[in-house]
Length: 299
Image (tube, rainbow, N blue to C red; front, side, top):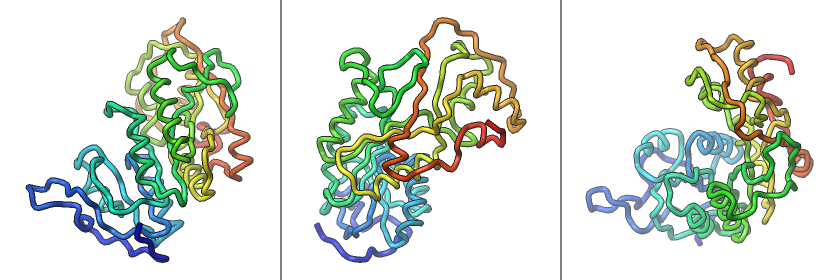
């Protein structure tokens, strides 16, 4: 792997040697020189782009690469300083920092995608996989923390995929960040329910939330620690019921649409998640302490 003490700054335009002469097909080798704080983002969507922005602020001379399934958003990524490449692109070097924040769809082998990302990690800085707190075996609105028992393999195909992906990341020496529901002003469960108007789910199901920007800051806090084989949880420590969330939306006066209500009575309950250990170890606190605070309301 070629390294340098300082990275060259990003220049708009396709990365060196990323395209071949065959009608724009991807070349088999990506030949840029890697720097000590360069970051590879697998899945540079909403979260990945915020991570990139904050990483650039921390390390202005770093280069940031984004792995995608298609070229649909490559122009957008280039404009914000991310060098995009397709999943099957081969590299002549490895990256000191890798964050995997792509969802488990539409890929057909999510754990293998984690293994592939691990192969692009140099083993120097940090490798982080953003997973989900869905892997915790709690559905009675009970308390849950980093050490709570997990859903057994074989019970749920959804959690099976996540747990196998986590294991792939940990086997590579990476860390796992289990996340609750992410939100911002125009994304999150509250926006989905507003669009639906009436939702066939029970109102007393407990959810846990965290703002996208707080996930990005937490992810970077983990990456900068250069840790190995650790599991963390990302949440705001203010669990709310579905009804609590939509009551806050109504009270805030920030949304034009009206929500009619929840009509379910017998679907599963949720969990109350707290990440006290994560915060203590990393010295991290969220900017948005709760969903209600984000909306300008008191808790």
